[in-house]
Image (cartoon, rainbow, N blue to C red; front, side, top):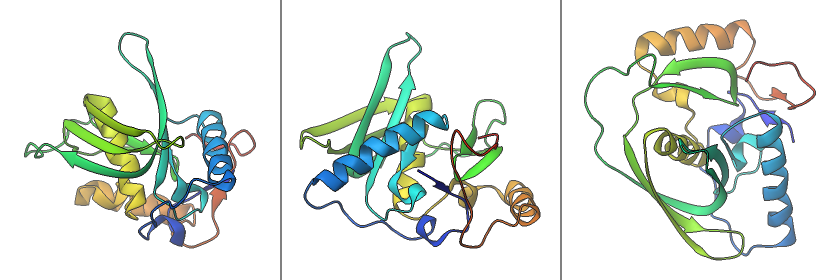
Length: 185
């Protein structure tokens, strides 16, 4: 599936709740996993592939090498308060498949809890910290029409906007296809 790039309207508007889980929704999620894996990425939200629904996929291997993979439909997010201060440029850099090839420091909550359901209708609760908390917050933002570059400190936002202007992003119609297009996601 093509991944939309910053400026596409699908990325900048809140997504609608998923209703009944249909074959179309199951197919969407399967395609999202394939796209996320091909990119490669650690998460992918439906708005990133032009579908305005509240669902995202995630995949990550923890410090012990255990796979952590799934989908969450209609998620809710809770976070501990953000610690004040500037982000650490080494430990708190973040990237996005919808702003490919770039990473910027961004302060996120160190701990997050996400609840929702799986494709099978099972309730899910994920209580995580560190990098996994960052992934869930990042993907949840996409469902609210927020991209991480929208949250950057002014000095980094200025750089991101210059990059977007140089690449002619910021308008509808830009996307890239993992496995086909040569972008450094």
